[in-house]
Image: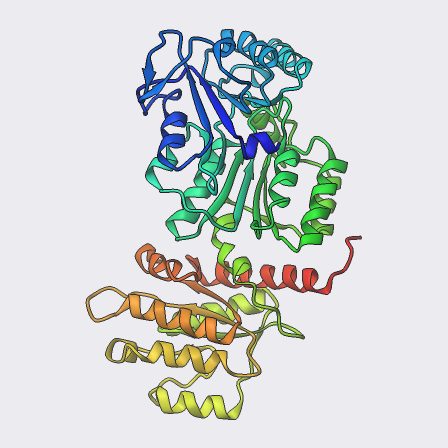
Length: 463
């Protein structure tokens, strides 16, 4: 796995001058994003590819490469995997589909690929994968077009996914919110290298503080348990999107990656025992990431939420959500209430949830002052902020986001934000705040985060 995530040399079979082609993108990424190792394009025509001297075959290379990217048709895959074994490559990454996901004949051919790789001590990633990426070293062994749209930035998050599209989409959602990603590892059919191999490898990196995991099957529960135990020991949260948990979903997963699905109580129990937060959607998987990266220690006792909004209706919806989620609204102290009374007009009668009213339009500093006041109250250990209908030039949304982020950092308490306006959510996300579209989503994420943090900080061993 070392030579897969941190290769010293990479060969690309089927390398292309066209950076929009599957064989051209990996070479382009390696050259553009600072990969310091040796790069060997392999092209039957010879000559330079993207300005780099190429070789006509793997056998013609001057050394055994750590990693070999195979951008070749399905009928040429076995021959090239055998060549990887013959030259002593560390691993082979096979982009090509048309194997295990195609039924018995495809599965037989997939087994032949694994046998050929194993014979030469080669680890096989794929087939049917978009590859892997290490953004700390520039080892982007992938053809994913998303890395053209969202520039790589190293960070504390690792994404491990059976699905290439889910892995790339999770990366895009995090990068769009200004969060750096260190690894994106996609396994495809998992003929050899599987999710647990990548999970163990990224957890061995001390810079990784959070893992997003997409599963369509759990082939070896003992192996998965060992990697989740490592995450638990390191205190690294693992957020899981568990797909193919229904009969229809499992049937579709078999067509997608040849996966067997994730039905059954054993996997659910394992994820629960190791404190993995299970998401119901890709958006939910990604949205709560800032909460887990903030690393604010949970206060003792039950969660006591302070709710602030510029809308009375949102205050009502937040109160409803707290009751549904069995969350306590914080009882604010007399000094805090007095400070809020001095800030707010008399017709804003509630003091949690706190309605800022239309005064926010007239006094842009009101939001930061109110949020800071609530967060500093000893009876409040978490904040939910909701802003609705901020259209027009009168609302200084960037200031609102900056002031909120400053108050959250100063007080060291967990905070979530919701707004139906994607532009407003974007401003708060850019300041490192976890953002959601609705009150219920935000408060639900706050609750799940606290459950996880209390369990991790208690240091209890899984059942």
